[in-house]
Length: 207
Image (cartoon, rainbow, N blue to C red; front, top):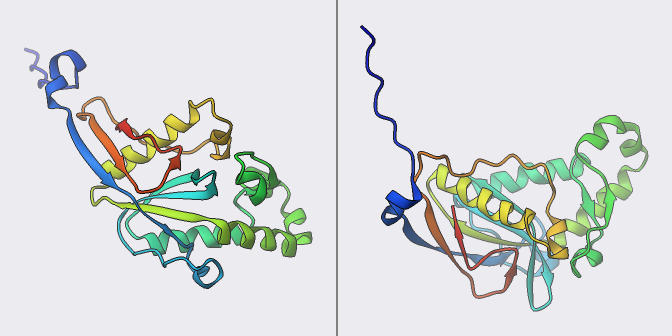
């Protein structure tokens, strides 16, 4: 005799709409990239668990460059810094980025794996470009203790940006590994609260 399978549940928007809750996210910032506080006169970033937005100044507010999640802001940004100075991250022209235009000055990721000699030959130039980009960054953060909620927020913001037709959406690097909501998880409506205009951060978004 075959044993009965357990009952599996997944979210059904018609049946389960009443289960969707609303949560406000308070975004703090702008903060400095670690180690650049004296150069840009910004406050150091608090070492919390949460979601962070990397932005540039842009038309009365800030424009999204990247999104990330972490258990420790300082540890994660230090990891990023090492990758920038190894040439592994793509570097943009800061002045172009501030008007919403993506202009790559150095290709990271797969490119450097195939052109390591080019990085070695131009290391000083690449490091100067990395310095310029890091000092220009303005960081916004929101504290979120739950790892899965952090991942879902990150995925929702990036997917929203990828689908945008705005020119500034091109500042976001493609190919990010995202872990959005699974079908067995109940959606959450997020209301983003920030005293500054953050281009790329919707006022409301479902995660």
